[in-house]
Length: 99
Image (cartoon, rainbow, N blue to C red; front, top):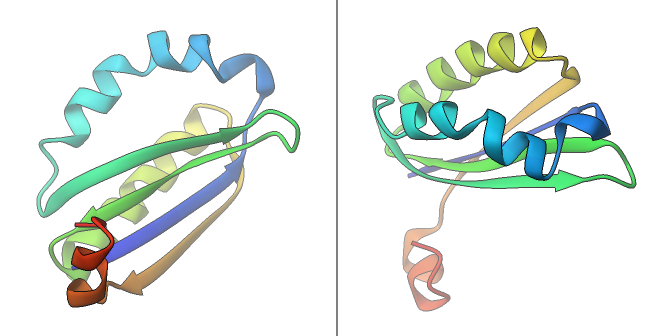
């Protein structure tokens, strides 16, 4: 499994309830992405950052998704998009209920 950490600068007025309402269809569509397992949505109004923590089944799916999603969030107003990829240590993650 592969974890993607995607962070970006994002307008505060588009976070919180505005994002919850405005991104519902987007959230539902993410479930249909090839190789997708899960996502945690993250935001910090103090630092004006948003993003997500994703789990994908394989690196190829993760890389394709990150490239597509980076363009999508940029069109929504995101700046300074950073994608980091990590292999998941599955045995240890299971101990801590991570997967």
